[in-house]
Length: 105
Image (cartoon, rainbow, N blue to C red; front, side, top):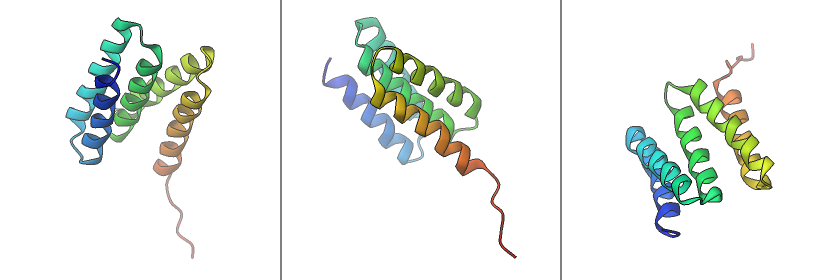
């Protein structure tokens, strides 16, 4: 379990990079659920981080933002500052990317 779940999360990122977002979301969701059942909090945080980032790539950006905010809060509350910063950065980077670009005249 300890090796399979992180590999499943990495596979979710690979599927997202290949634009197979439904498969990526399914993999991340499964990893989050299973790690939660097993009490593997760090892996659960990593899976919800991946899931939030994948959701931000789809049309469901509000759900992604909410998931990333919840992941950041949970991570920070339990001392996982690195994951909290990654969740915050993921929320911020997509907000900047989705802002309208102004062309110089």
